[in-house]
Length: 111
Length: 395
Image 1 (tube, chains in turn blue, cyan):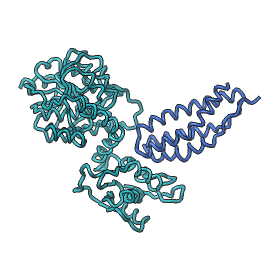
Image 2 (tube, helix red, strand yellow):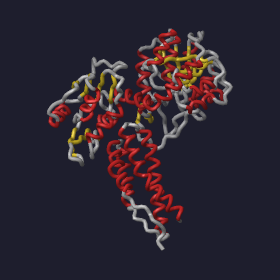
Image 3 (cartoon, helix red, strand yellow):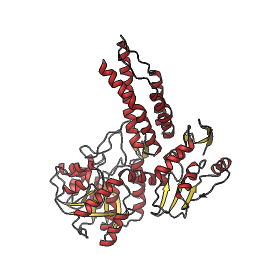
Image 4 (spheres, one colour):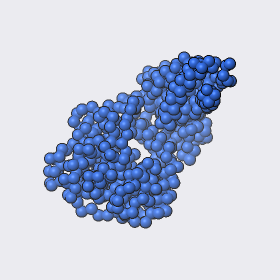
C-alpha cells in the first residue's frame, strides 16, 4: 500500500506543472502537442481516481475531491468538442493547476 | 458574425466571437500578450495581424515591433466599433479592412490566432485562405530545426547532379497511398510498361509487394519516421528528395538521387540560384511537390493513383502502406464530396492539399486525371475508371 501512496503523492505533485505546460502549448496554438498531453492527463486522472478508491478501501484517509476531478474532465471535454482552446487553456491554468497545487499529500496509512 | 463582450475574472473585457472566446476569460490581455510573444518573428520587416478584436494582440504587437510597420485586419464594422468602444487611441498600427493588394512576401509575418480561425468558421470566405497559411506556419514552427539539420546534411552529401533524367513516355502516374490504391494498384500493374511511375515514399513497399518497380520515388518529409519507407527494400532506382527531407532516409538509398528545391525556403532558393536548378512549389505534402515536379518534367498526362485526400470509415491509407493510421474520434474531421458524389471524411490538412492541387492544375499545361473514385472531388481533375485509363494511355 505504501507504494501506491508514494506513486499517488508523486503524481499529485506533477499535475500542476503538467497542467501549466498544457495551457502554454494551447496558448501558443500548439494544438497537437497539447492534445497528446491532455490524453495523458485524462489517463492519469482515471488512475488517480482508482488509486484514491483503493486507498480509501484500505482505510487510508484521502482528502482529494474526486467529484471535482470529474467536473474538470467534463469541462475539458466540452471545450475540446467545440475546439475552444482558450477555454481549455483557462481550465488548465486557472482551475486545474491551482486545485492540484493545493491538493493535500497523503501522509501515511491511518492506523 | 456575433460579437459578445464579457467581463473576465480580472475585471477586464474579453470577447467571444460566434460563441468562441478570443481571449482568456481570466486574464485576457495577458493571454493575448503571451500569444504575440510566442509568435513574433523579429527578423521580419512588417507584420500583418488577422483580427482586431479588442486590440490586445494588436497593441502588444505594435509595441514589440518597435516602429516597424504593423497592419491589423479588421473583419467588419461591428468589430471596429467594439474596438473603439474599449480603446480611446490606437497607436503604432494601421487598421485595414481589405487584404487585397497587401504585400505578402517573405519579409512580412502574417499572424493568425488559431482561436480566431475557429471563431470565424469554415464557411467564412477567407477561412480557407487563412487556414493554409496557418497550417504551414504550424508545421514550419514544429520542424524548422529538423529541416535545417536535414538541409545541411543533404547539401553536404549532395552529388551536385544538376539535371534530372529525361523521360521518353508522355504519361506519368503519380502514386500516393490513399485507400483506393488497394483496388487501383491492379490497374497500374496492367499499364506499367506504358507509363512512367512516380511513387511517393509511403507507397513504395506496397508497389514492390505487387511487383511494380517505380521509375522514381519521391520523399519530402523531414521526420525520422520516413526512414521505414525505403528501409528493407532493395529499391535502387531514382530517388527525388526535397532539400529538407530526412537525411537518414536518403543515406539509406544506394541508387541515383536528385535534389528538389522548394520555393519559399530561403536556403533552398540560394542553392537554386547558384546551380540554376528549378524551384518547386511544395503545396505542403509529398504528393503536391511530386505534382510540381511532374509539371516541371513536362509530361502530357498525369494520372493520380491513391491520391484520395479523404476516406470512408476510419482507414486513411491503403493496406500495408507505410503511412496508415486509424482515425478515432478525430475532432478535426470534416465532410467533403467524393468523385462518386458520396460524402467522405477529410481533415483540414488533406483539404488544404486538395485546394492547392485545384489551383495548381489551373496553371499546368498537362491534363490531370484521378483514379480515386471515393477520393475527394477536385475541380478540373476528372475521375477515370479502368477502361478510360487504358484508353487514355493508348491515345
